[in-house]
Image (cartoon, rainbow, N blue to C red; front, side, top):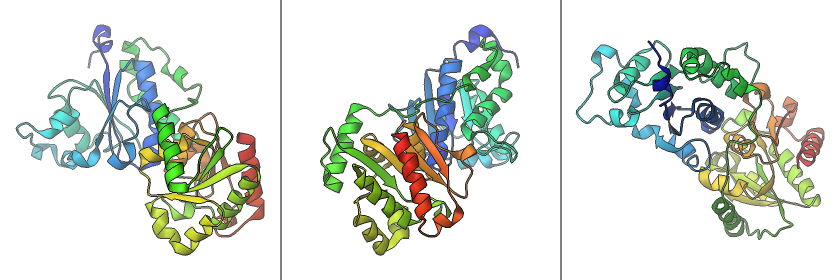
Length: 351
């Protein structure tokens, strides 16, 4: 393929396809910022899990979103000889008119890639790259950096045509923020605190949002550690608030939820967009290795993310005020005074 500088300079629209969990989608925001700043792309759209990515437009480098469940991408996995384009095919509308398509779904050389390229070329001739959702086993840097490194390695001729001699320069410093709440988010967050937790926030109120859950039960610090952490933070002048999702409501049970309520207000059943609003009011965040922790880090909130079984070097939340702490395995199965002290010390140093 030949690249012409004048053609490459016209690039202004990109699409990211990702089917992963909330944290995985948040960690691609660094890649979205990279292709905007390095390539001069003005519009980055995202096809992904609709429940997770609805908050992105207006707060991140992502301009628009589409639920992956509304796009029949499973059709692209079939044998290319059997792949057919229907009249007014919705896939053409969803995947057409892009200059760049970056897909975490499918693999390089797969039927998916062949069919994706075929249908995308109905309306344009995009640069297409298949990216890995996980780094190689021996990789010891952050996953968000790997996404960009893999992109650069796969598209260096195109980047050279754009006049970017060393795009690795964009990797020298991690971004301080990837999610930027607005004034409406803050007002909505204050309303959530008032209506769902009976907390009226004044100028001197330091809200500490504590998220004791995670998609993986093995990632969850023991609940008694969280109740003790909330109690200590209250003595330190914070107003702790527990944030629970649907998974925690089912997994914790009434007994544990009541245990949380004895030391702080509990807010549950928020949408991800409402979670962003709530976090925009926080002075401090504490939580497990979870999607919500990735959001808090990307918002540049003073945040402590508690790791045990997973590797924070690769999967920690990123952000200028985000701190990840690895604790001993036993504190994930029972109360640990020592672990609580570590978390409190780290949290107070972060604010």
